[in-house]
Length: 136
Image (cartoon, rainbow, N blue to C red; front, side):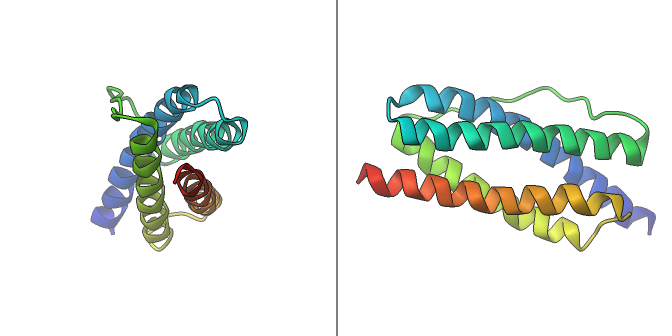
């Protein structure tokens, strides 16, 4: 059981890092378009990523007694279109990981944060798909 919990904590730590990275990524990506709808969609995802980061840090604290400390990374992209494609792919991966983590939760307090993040990520993927579709 201890190994199971450690695996969950490791995934939670990776999630914390990814949520922070995506929040930063979207704050830069939204500046690369003048389209108001695109900016609104990206801002929505940016705000949710910060919310997920905070929820996961809180959950990490509840489970370990400390916040996860890490060296932030930055996502690079060549163009707005490339960034949108990357964002959608990352959102799909995150939703899948959170679904897997839901089946691993070591305590019921983890459910709300994971379910919220999983459904938000699916919504973000849809929004980025809409942006990409309008670029073509």
